[in-house]
Length: 344
Ligand SMILES: [Zn+2]
Ligand SMILES: [Zn+2]
Ligand SMILES: [Zn+2]
Image (cartoon, rainbow, N blue to C red; front, top):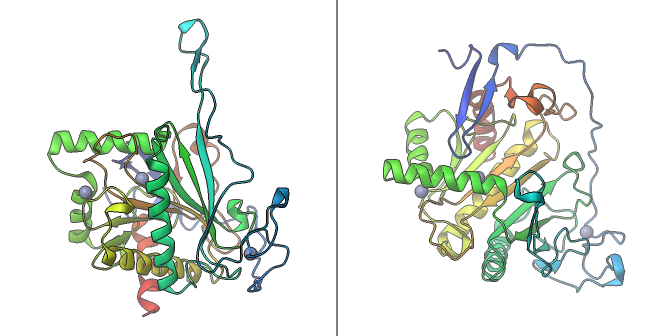
């Protein structure tokens, strides 16, 4: 099988889902939707932004004049901390089933500056953001009803981010959501069968092949995973086998800040626009059990495909069968790798 030419499917060992790769189609003409390019320079402070220091939010709460990061409970939280968590199962047939889901939603502003992003913030400030993520993970994870803490960032209007002010969200839930639950199972089964860690072993293989690694430092490796679904999808893994932010050394905080800045800056160079994406960290569940199978990582899922205006859609066969991509993970990695090196 020629991975660069023949249609094939690739396995994601974390979720055990497949992705169809059709490299022969990359020359296909595009006549679909064009997204508007919105390159607009943001001001350092925007009086209408509900995240800027000193401004008021929905409901009249006024933000403090914060100087570093700023954390608050989401005014439009999707979850509530208390409430019933009983189970409904009509006639016990497992067909009409519901469970209460207590949880918390928080917002973290990365910086008082409205115009910065992870790509343009000084790495010292990103280190501060990482320490805030760690403290939040610890605080929320320690709550007895919270078994999973999901930290994620939506960047860009294309990803539904309603505000350009650099910020992320945390949704902490009683249940472990489907994707981390699948990855937990994938990692636990691998550990049981191979007596090793899935992502530690995967990093070993990637280090040997060197075809999908885009940049690395003493603490972390960023690569386009073999099973990437999104055109420029990136996985960042810690080199050390660890499960969550609170296990980081001081040096790992610095190294993660560096690699986050590197990857997001490379993204902004792909089509010369601020690159939209959803990103987030997958960390061990906070259910009080030891999770030796878990290996800390971050996923970046950017939607752009061919230009600043042409995005990938997940429709048709992808909604009904499995995801599909044309450009291979290897060619996306080659491009991102060249952009990572360029900035040095
Ligand atoms: Zn703002
Ligand atoms: Zn590991
Ligand atoms: Zn994951």
